[in-house]
Image 1 (cartoon, helix red, strand yellow):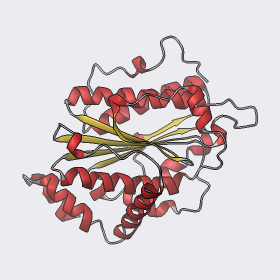
Image 2 (cartoon, one colour):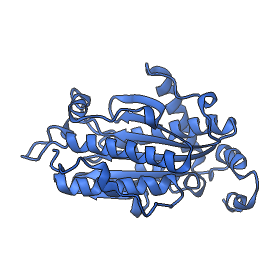
Image 3 (cartoon, rainbow, N blue to C red):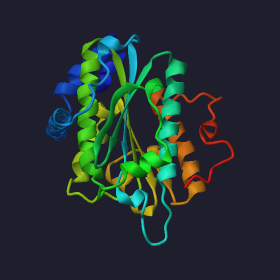
Length: 285
């Protein structure tokens, strides 16, 4: 890792990062990262989805590669115990994420790609230029959450990281400089058997953190433990109680976190995430 940190002064830093990423994740992290990449490749091969945007279709030399993992479990629309559906809020988070990344693309004058996955259903849309994406509406989120069960947050995070690394290597092999942003939106704790400690090793590894940021929007107290278990930085753990106004405020914080991650910590003073919310209509649940 000392070797990796020393690369920041090297002219060909980004190309060397690729070699380092392939070979020198710390020894206890490399097997887990490799497993995640293999699982992601298998999942991609099994899914009937459009191919990701090819590097040949890109014009800019720098790229932001994003992924959002959306909780599509039934609890989003029918949590029980008299608690409200948050399908509208999830749709709003998706809208705010896309609008924020479009702003990043305009500010940096470079291409931003986003892949969307459901925690249960898998790939919704592959790596696509954000300006070509249509945000979900409430009805579409409700449809996405029908007929599914559980919240395999950690398993999907594992394959999500593998997918990001695989696509990053494809982009960097074409000479692009890449910044990765992984966003998770969930209302519940993971209920599969994947050990979060293995994922925490990757997420907190300096080699991975040097070029990737993980952000999580946790709706409801049931989800609040996930950020710490995965080792996500505190500023990128966005917590909200299961109330429309509280979630709307959390979505603003999510937008700021995504903007900061995409632009190496630089958030324009003029950036106003409130403009991403429907005018005069915070009660969207």
